[in-house]
Length: 491
Image 1: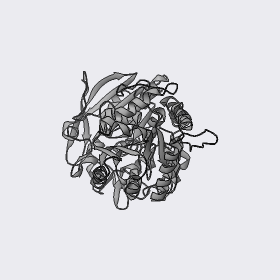
Image 2: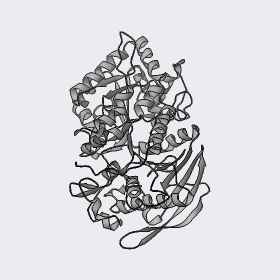
Image 3: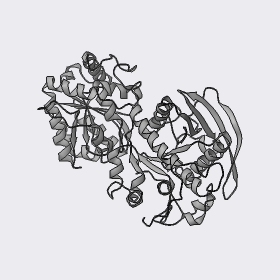
Image 4: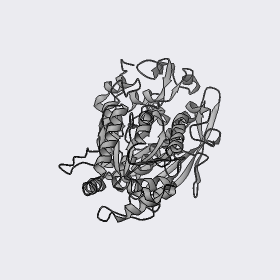
């Protein structure tokens, strides 16, 4: 099967979050199953290509004020995957992918509309795929275009599109005059299509027009169909419930495994845990914590500092956490209030909180390997990757039961020796505190704790199983006769 991905970021070329990891890994897993994979990406200022070649020097994209002319660059093949880049320096040769310190770039709608139309025009020349697979709001116009402006195109009109939601909180909201600017018809600006409380909602357009919708865990697929987690689009998703599937993200164990991690001081495995204590000592040294602290349990945090990630709960119990027999090691950046919270805690409790306000990939690996526990108290978490990495490293997750966190972590039961971590359900600080205390209590029984560690280390969340689920979705949309989706009667 010929499968074409369209996404705004992908490792190793560009990254701001987990989307890049998925778009980097899933096509490789699909190619390994024997499918033909093409990935289309914007060519950013940060994109580094070893031997770029211009395939199409001029792709015409109409806007209401002028035509713009992008080009298609061949980025080569990696692990059986062909990469192409849409090159238009006025839009993509910028310091950041989506915005700057002042906020999102004001022309993001134009930037990613040009990307989507360029992908479709390039596919007509290179050869249409059997199915498009688009990701998040930046590529959400592609399924809209397929079923509207390209609805009678003999090369593309019958090509189905699968759309994956990585985070419902980011939707691509723009003013109404965005439609004529992008040369899109006004009849799209209705409650059954792209209109959303007086604005154009690109994500909503994809949810209406895509042939199948996936998201990154089974639990999150259920949650986003509720008012609490749907960000106003739960009604749209409920109307399409028969074509919504949750498929858990996989992880790359070539990159994230203590058996072959190139960043950690000592490798180890489920059959030989000896190296973990050495990694713990190294981690504490990296954060300037005294060697004598190795006897205490270390709780690791690697995160964007934001309320979505549960740091409002952490702030409410931080001073009580400081009285517990443990050390918190945190790496991340984000909202200024939470950055200041961690700076205050480090100053006030220097023997209990060690923090670096940054993102450092090597240090992230050292935290996964050296910590005893890993904290993810998220308000919502579509999938989450760090809790899965933590399982492989024998770093026991402490999570809130939401989204992929709920799907991947099984509660520990000391009586049966089953389970892989600790979970709390109610989004309140007291529930988080009780869950942390349960983990600290369990840590005191080191014999049982090693059983708990090994339970997690033997779990397999590689991409192979998830890739096979995606293939079943592709086969479903390719085999069916495409019929235009009836307009929805809900907001």
